Image (cartoon, rainbow, N blue to C red; front, side, top):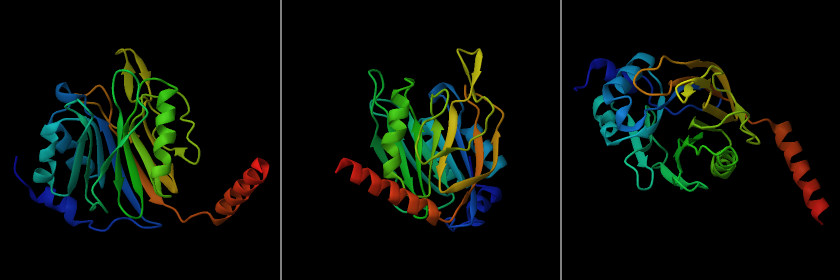
Length: 242
């Protein structure tokens, strides 16, 4: 594949990381390892939707060509002992290189989150465990590592409420996957803190067993009243412990 003028425009139109009051569009898609969505489908989706940030799960080494094809900034972190892992393509430069965060893991797969910092906000790109208690523990583990303006997005493998204090589930409500190729469920999620969702969508599926999801988010000013009450509750807890 070669660069096109459209690909160059994908990164030249927006070089600045969003600040308070500004918005951005983010995609997330579980690609289904080497048997799912190939590189050309991912590139076609990016060219069509023109996201500012594109999160991927079960991404293999073939997707390391994305910055060569589309420009921008890119990082991929394979899971331990696996050929696939989480990846992120972005129009915006990273404030620092994305890092891997080890999550509480089950017996089969050692799970990690890809932590991505843009300065004004941060992201955890996740592919969580199937255990419904364990995957909620994994969410609570990663939350303190993120900035006030933050989002956790990806394949949660989670049914029902996420139970993630301080975060709101703002992702699309339509199913994103069929369990056992039969039961439609919504397991691809987007949890945010300090942001408002302006638009959400589940996009058509292609070669993966998951649908991509798209969310447009705006960074909100910190709620000073909320911060005051949080400090008040913290003081009360300290008094109760004393």
